[in-house]
Image (cartoon, rainbow over all chains, first blue to last red; front, top):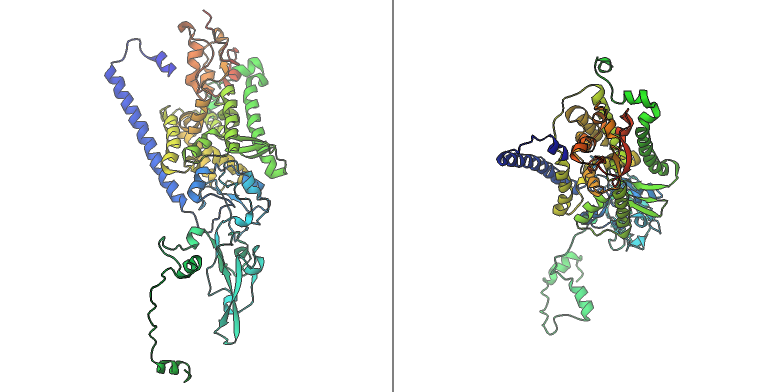
Length: 267
Length: 293
């Protein structure tokens, strides 16, 4: 600014010209910056939708809040003893510079002292997470039941065995094996109230491509309508039917002859 | 080489080297490179050798696992995105702000920032290859970009500039893996070399603008203390990354302007001190600014 004043001719420029210059310069800058802004905004919105195999560290705030809070310093990455966490590089399918892990490559080892959360200087990883079993990095889903060895009646059980919360986050539920007719199928069932999304099951799955995968909880979980109630839960909480005094209409059953056909002649 | 041997073309600083010797003619440049290497080295010691003096990166870090440091530019983006940060990063940003408010905001740019060697190289190559053509960018562009970098989080609710910030991409890349980040840095290098002289650091970088803001009243300043010795060789203008800051101090005696370079754009790189054969410039404080008649 100062040098311009020095080089300016001694007599004042006409006001109209400098005003025009000012408007031109400002318009110029605004246009350029506006274009950059629109481009960045688009890029930002695009990068919100990261690849589904990308998982955030324990205690991470919900994605949008996380992207507001994280300053991409990498302190969590450097304090991760198992090299699980990485900082996203530009053009990777995760927001540039933010920490993530890929469960199939290196899962979270669920350190009891949660060093990544302790290292976070901003609160992007929430310090109110004190028990790592309470972390919700994602949710394991048995996504390919057709290729899961257990679902074919084999006893692989690897995902179940490696689960740090065995019998809580993953249980083996017995089904009838209709292929052989007399064996059992031990179906790995994930329970969302206990699964932390650490990814050890996905990491350990013996298939070429894992049949069990950890997904972001927003993808993996359904949600009831706000108005919807499970009748039996309400009934138990209320200690009895909520609709006392309403008569129960008699069940209309099909004729006995149908039962006879179904049960081989027995009533 | 061809450019070097052209008659009548002299390399800025060559006279200073003859008069003052190599060390005096390159002292601040060497110290500056040393500072850049040391800062980066302290960060690298952790991941490479397990010696954790500085942990993290320029965005936020911990000194010896106790003192937090943080970049006020990105912390501000985070705050404007609607996040209320923990004390640690706020304290870190405060420490850095006070540090540069005293030492000169753009000391970060010239003594710490990893992009500086890249654009310095482009600038030197430009002089060496005698590339005169340069698209003029508006100096105020970086202020518009700073406004943008702080406005976008306000609108979107998350940190946006850090998606593309070359400073953090380069520094983070060196420490945590570069990936395709080289493309961005190469782009800036080529932009500075062929499109616009000192285009990135001098005209566009909003991080530099933020540090300019922080250091606008800084204590440590370069002063043209012996300006009556100036022989108009123009070497200081040739090497200065922000040449417009020199003139008021160097040539302002008749207008009653003091010899201290008060313009906040000055990066305190000290290269003008190096290349001046007449020892016109020296480091001083902003208070020693009496315009002797």
